[in-house]
Length: 316
Image 1 (cartoon, one colour):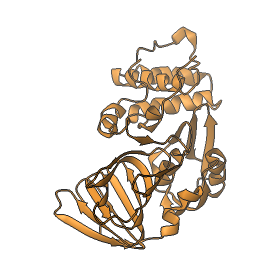
Image 2 (cartoon, rainbow, N blue to C red):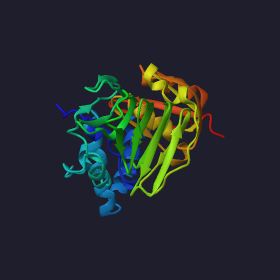
Image 3 (tube, rainbow, N blue to C red):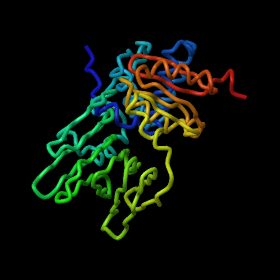
């Protein structure tokens, strides 16, 4: 029996460019689109260089962990040497930089939402794949958001500031409701009640974000507050995701939080396709099938892997 993919593994990038090319070969060959001679073409591609061989081993190991068999012709089977390259060559260093918080106080799984009542009377609602530490003392109330998204309703307590620490900034509020999402190096804030003060970096940049506004920041930058569609931003609390001309790459990133298994957007040119609509989070596979009706896409469901690619029939 093959080991199940962990949530951590599914969060990692799939691979570098060569490994993705090898994975494309495997998707086509096992989806019944390739001719038998294509295996020879694939094997020639594998033997072109040591980098190609390494990428093929990584892709085949990933394919097997996704629950499929690499049905390579036995006479020319290339041995799988890579037990260490399960998810990709470039993912390891990236994941080390993003892995803080796996032992956090509160963690939600794929598709899981959780509501928490804190000791001070404040309420947190955690979106799927969220990790937070909570520290409430006599002098402060602090939530560290490592990844994911949280909606906060703060109980008033003038003696103890309520702060959320995420990325390279802190957000302070009193008697306030707001939503914070941390994804990679970017943190997004939307305020639904009153005001939140954002302190960025070494405290040299400070912004006041009022009700109905939001901002974003990264490691080295802080945007200005601007008006936001608050209802759309917090629609995840009602099991909905609202997109208005959002790039397909961002839409897929959102859907990954609700879908067990990997979603692979095949082809960088698809990342910028605009998407508008309301997506239910209860059945992502069904929603993806609906998505291909409105865009020139083809969605293929494989064991533990969903491939989204350009539909050659509807592409001019």
